[in-house]
Length: 251
Image (cartoon, rainbow, N blue to C red; front, top):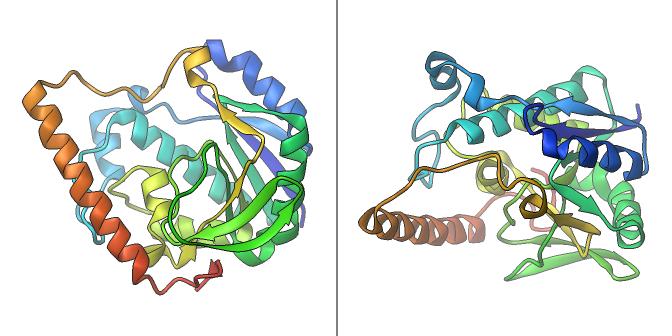
């Protein structure tokens, strides 16, 4: 078994193509640019076939946009490849990231040392908040297991065992992939995080987000924010009482 890098790149996002190649060249391991699933190119029937409803608590309060469905399917493809190729681990990075070589090298060394035991390690673009268990440090980089896992899937290292678990549990899904991964009370995998990781989100410097939302009225926006706050509070409670190991790893 070995490690491998996958740079997720949406083919129609041509402004990101050069950056995707730069990420592959700078990630420190062999890999490939992986064509992401374009949710906007899928039929309504295919989109609906992927999505369940109220699959686990807390109930996710929003419908999924085509871009969110495509993003989830893209990560599922990579998890399936990890299992199919019998990789020990894979580094998955999205094409709107940037690598700062020196802090990234420290973060990568930490991830390599601990991915087998922890399963899923986020290369976070921002610090986590709330209680966390520190696992290890390497220079400025700190590897910890937050009680409430962070969002974003900009970059992460995933073990084969974690990929197999996540793949099995997401045959249908009802929330974005980062929100699903955050749900360790359901998956049994409490994601670890490295910060600073040497990874920065530069979507705004490229072409903006490829997951677009519609225009909402002020009333709709207030309703959405209220639903988001209620969901976040429920996630905090679920995280506090989660059976997933507080020190990380697979339950």
